[in-house]
Image (cartoon, rainbow, N blue to C red; front, side, top):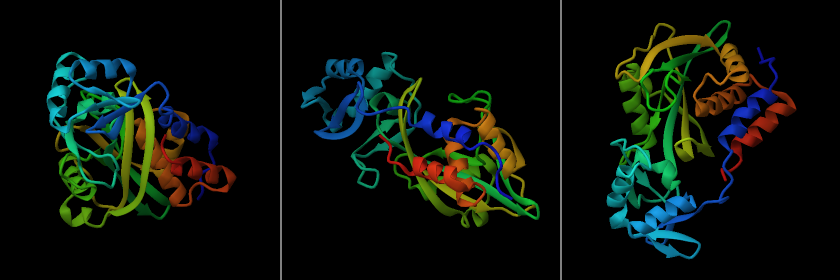
Length: 278
């Protein structure tokens, strides 16, 4: 069966995740002259106070100074230190130039990479999806609905290795199951959020799970899991903001790929999802 809801209301999630138009008020942030991010003028001033130098239309830091400067600015209250190192790249498929704490990424406007897993169950009445509820004490988006597995790719790991790690830690999905996950999409966006500029690149996977498998919270990041019909999931995305902001994008993509969304509006949704981030 195809989804019968009003698809223009799905597109609002795509627009919300692409509300940052670059450069806008931001200026380039560079490491040794190579651009890796975008910063607001006020943050550029804070960087200059820590030794960054003007570089054409932006500011640049030596790679060797990045970690010390990032720690200093966290201590000054610009962002919260998360204790998770992420790779810094000028190009998402290029080499890692440096590492920076996850909490600093939005302030520096540095692109982050994440993984999202659609945990699917095929039944006679259609496609069902495992839905997680984020723990109430999560730093970002507490209590929101989420995927069965999702997370940022830490320094030194590939998306695939991160998926396997997160699957075991978040949902007790064994290695024998997760190895069947299929890469299905890479989605990107540029979004202004309270914590700053989110420039995210999401590696998305589908995993068909046995009807008898029930995910279990392991590391405390998820309160509970529920299995929903896919059409109920799309209705919830259409009518509410209950899902974490970027999860909505991945679910819309899944509905399109599995033929649950069709017609001219579906083509417009596809074009919006696939448009390069600003």
